[in-house]
Image (cartoon, rainbow, N blue to C red; front, side, top):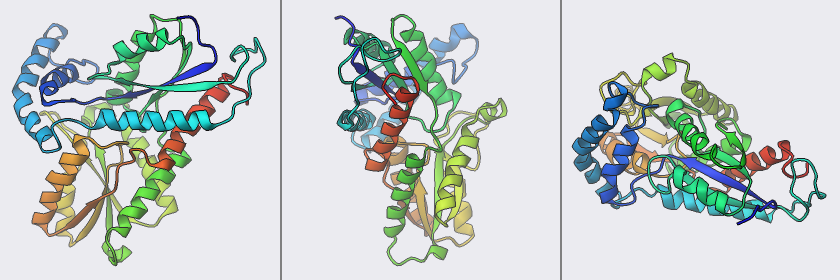
Length: 344
């Protein structure tokens, strides 16, 4: 197919997740094979050790996925986000560029197509980029679906993206972080306000908000990773706009290295000891439901809270929250306008 100069592509970069119980083991293998986020001995041992670890962990992990429906919902949710964003982008009237305008199309109105590229399970980045090239798209915005940058998330996804796209004549721009985007903050405030309402008549003095972020090895932060700073800036923007009693903890750690503290389990126990009885959990680093929300928070932490005598609710995940989709649209439109891919 020839060049499609009137269509701008957007590709969501995300982690991915197993789409069946049979996919759990190969998904884990792909994850542990990524030397950028975990070094398993010398480089020649990375894949053999990844195979061993994925084999040892797959049984337990399959049981967890059974508890949330037998697979990760991340592909369906990310697909719905992509569809919603594509619809919103194409509703906006964009006047045509004059022919041969620098950076623009060659006349005609601009349209958008939104794709999904996952890091560790299908549709994989290395399969999606060739498909985008086949459509004729020659301008592409790669948008990480991780609001807060970390080498373990956005960094790894962008590294693979750049490796693959370097083989194709596609002009691209990457968006690696958007932790303080005003509409993103508004979407978080929206779900927090609705979460607070779920406690009924509980007073603000008796309700605590617990921001639960995905954990990272402490050494990443010690080496300059901005993830914690970005997370704190997001929380800072939220708390400027709404008075809440809040705390920050970290979930989903694995392995023997030192991880960010406090863990969400430890924070729940600490708050219980202080007499806190009502906690709203906000999965601050996640933009869609998956095993971290549906199992860890909704089952594991909910059971712990019950034992501790705590009433624990979770905010809805952003998923296709209209304010969140508006935030993504605004990020894309500002990007393509600044690049002069569309008229300002």
